[in-house]
Image (cartoon, rainbow, N blue to C red):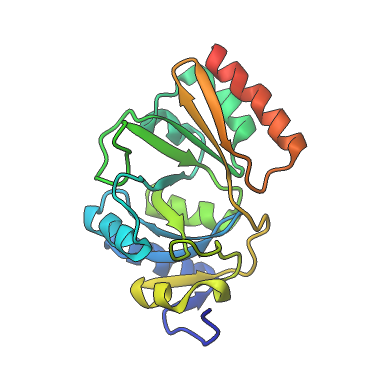
Length: 217
């Protein structure tokens, strides 16, 4: 556990958020909070930055990273969703749901899986959304923990080894949901709820009804 102050860690202020955005746009890696956990993120347009995340996490390149988006409309540009799906997507996002479906665009290795799918999420967290808007609406991310470790819900839970390897970190206190996202994988006219994560049974039931409408549409 990293319990000492880290020179790369900035407390949240609007100016410090802009500094983090600048580092990301220049190809750097940042640790920052979402509604669920702290993530390591980089620009999806920087292949070398994506490779650095895989190296830090000791993660196989065929296990693609999630892509955070600033608003549901961005999903229509990246993935195999249609304009008519937008109203339903807006009832799911922002929120702790990762949706895996076919990618519509080419991305650097690690952004799209070997099967051509992309994992998208729009976080319900004002600071994460603000950061996304400043870096161009998308970020490739993975939870800021070493392989096999717990996902951190506070910056001081991020392992020192990770903080040493990223370029900057933004501390904005606890992640409000404090757990993993739910994951849904689409396959043509079918879907599978891969994980329910920190989502309540009631919310799973609500969103599953929406997802059923998506695949039937």
